[in-house]
Length: 402
Image (cartoon, rainbow, N blue to C red; front, side, top):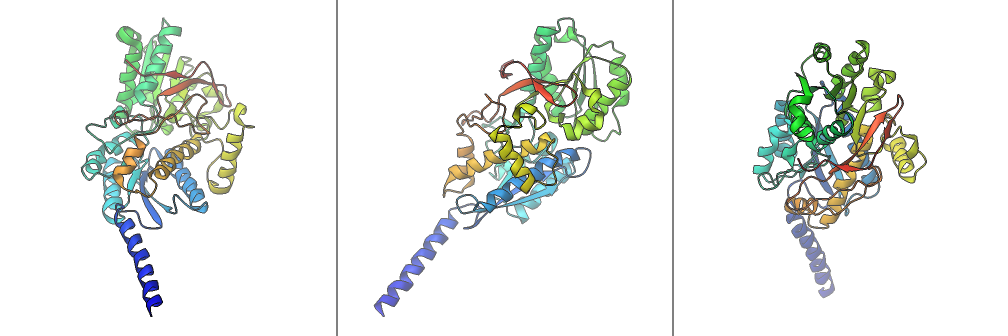
């Protein structure tokens, strides 16, 4: 009788211990699962970026097959917001209030994230590694629950501005940009890079709305300004249109293209590979079409994952590498949390990354954060399109500072 009592007591103690451990975790975490919420433009004008979400789901599927994170499987709930901020608000509220997710990860779009930033911060729910490079994600004092991942748009645009100053002193610059915070951040950064010569060098600007059918009229107008340099800040659909139209009207400017739209599969091929020769961008991830990576262990490991888990993706699509890499960062943060799977600890670990190296980042580029620095990636390398792939050139450089 005594031994049976002890056995029951022991089992009860273990169960009570598990219940206590679970009670220390926040909503979205059970003894076996972590619910992670996400919104992506699987439809609409920015649907090419939907491959990012599909790749993240594929990466978490691999992690689950390997046993999950500290014994927890990832339940990745990704909803389509069509790149529409009102729809993002609806989907994020559903994820938080109905699905009871632990955190939001990689919600895509500058305007979309801005629409839910205060809502998530007021509820102290991590809005982690958002898929946008706006400066506003690096504001830990005002928004301590929001953190970016990729280099900021202003950092990238400063790099273009400095390159123009150093290499194209007689430049007459035309700028096409999306009429929202995404485009405005790039334009601010470009002016910062050009410094006191910005007013003289920038001779024309045009914007577009994501509801516009084409940007052909904007390109014609910019061509008419006499510009010999073009900076294009556009979503994939409009970037492809720009490349094609610039070529078709026989305009041959030195063309800079925002990194967000350099996918071979989603942009360069639809535009026409020959029409993009000579375009310059800045990058931080390895391009999957660049021959220099094909025989490396890192590429082979990524390719093996692609062929097993991410079969809907094309191996030429850099968005698949983006999704793979940012997912690795999240998994490392969750592992660092150990058994303390609380939202507070997630943000603490996310703000304590020290020179993290990821296999598919450009060599020399690492990830670092701190309690007062929510900008994980701060370096990029220039690359030029040769008709088949993006060829990196020059050194890895920082666009920080003004």
